[in-house]
Image 1 (cartoon, rainbow, N blue to C red):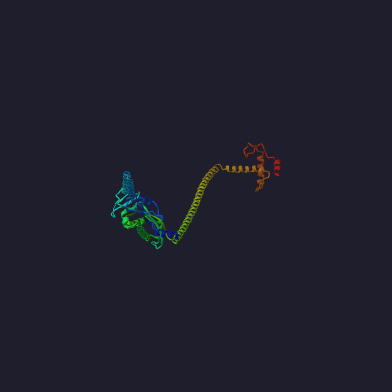
Image 2 (cartoon, rainbow, N blue to C red; image 1 turned 135 degrees about the vertical axis):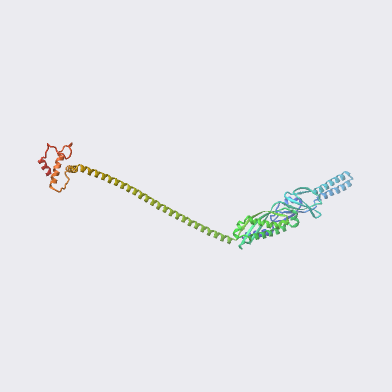
Length: 408
């Protein structure tokens, strides 16, 4: 920062605008050459106002006088005539060249007569009498002008540094040359620009310096334009090359921004955590709802199965009731059928027991044992094609076999 301030002060000290004094024929080279400070002149003052080539005229007089003297000494008219002709030609050339004025490209020339300005000529070759000299040559190019402002207070009383680059153009050479010189305009323009910049900085805060808007630039141009209009100068462009508050202020703002960023990041994390928590709760809620729905479906299915079983039991009960009713009707109609069914069941059980020699039978009375043996004998002796419970008339029980069977 110290180096930048020293550079800005040096820029102010040596100035940026200058004018030079050179011969008119060297004007084109002078407008394209820098001086020792690196500046290109914007105004040139011709070294010699008289454009007559005195050297050629003097040479013509020397030739004329020398030729006449030599011809007289030699008594030779030809030498005298030749000297007169050459002298006249050289004199005409010296005087004729004074009528031709060449103004370099991109330059305006101011003409005077008797010390008074008469008109302005543009670039090119002009035929002007030698008694009308060219007093000044003024450039028409756009001229850059640097304006540094060091430690200017802002709206919130912060010392800021600002540097802008203006480009201006001399639109009226007469007003610029005869109202002020280039060196004086440098100082006046520098002071006016710095004053306008300080006023502009007083209207903005320190944190707005790096983002100076177009509205501020328009106000700056209007204010500067009013101050330099009498000098025939017009500002064409304004560019901010450097705008920065003090380093401490920048560090403070960066710290504040960092804190804000950290807070924003923390808030974002909290919002994300809340969203995750809400998503987890929503997922758990959906899982609970799904579980309840599954249980409800299960209960509904169970209810439907129980209803179906109830209907089946109801149908079975109705069928059993109908069967029993039919059976009761049959028993009422056929009273011996029940006894026959009972005996038939007993015969089936007895036959099953008779086929198993290891089976144990528990009976209540002695006649039950005798009946069981009898039934066994009947089942073993009955032909396979006879109906169970019927005994052939031509067969009888063998007492010996019964005794053997009972012993077994």
